[in-house]
Length: 273
Ligand code: DGL
Image (cartoon, rainbow, N blue to C red):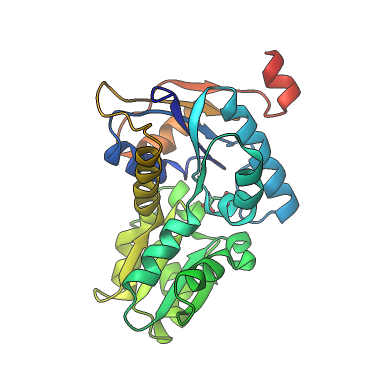
């Protein structure tokens, strides 16, 4: 069981920011990552579609032999964690709760900002989760949909990134939060810009980092943590492996290899192929 892989999925390349943290904290683990690059972005889609895509991705990863499933996508975690936790035969970890827990822990002013995709913010999943850890905390949320294409186009150090960050973060900044949750996989790539705009006093929460800690403690509890050997990562994508390799290598800051294209996430198709 220990030697089975950690399964992770995201709508595309974004989840690699979560994978990066998992790899760093758990260097001996084997990881199977699925990026549904043919259908990205999920962030503007309806809850029903997001849940369907999440179920398809989870089923695909189950066929690869996994000991734990990480929903490395905030949008999918916001809408599909409950259903996947009920349906999957392995533990399921989303990125929302670990980030929410850390935000509730570090805020002194009891005021937390949350940024994410439209679907994540509309779901109120972060607010719900933060209040579960500390009901007194006030949450101010803002969707930042243009951050995703800015990062995917490699524009994170350009003026456009600063202009949009000033615009999106204005209300949150004025509200006087002392903590900000980066509630989308792509935002850690913009962390420098976000820090510059929010100022040095603000705690910036990287949900991927917190999720990696949660994965570690879950595996430890279950006696399934690999503590030796060499770790590995392989990738499955539903669109061009070349594009994934190019953008993903930028995200991970290392050259990606072992990327395989899969034509369909329809269970009937991949189980027969
Ligand atoms: N991975 C998504 C998230 O974390 C961002 C990209 C998308 O909209 O699919 O919410």
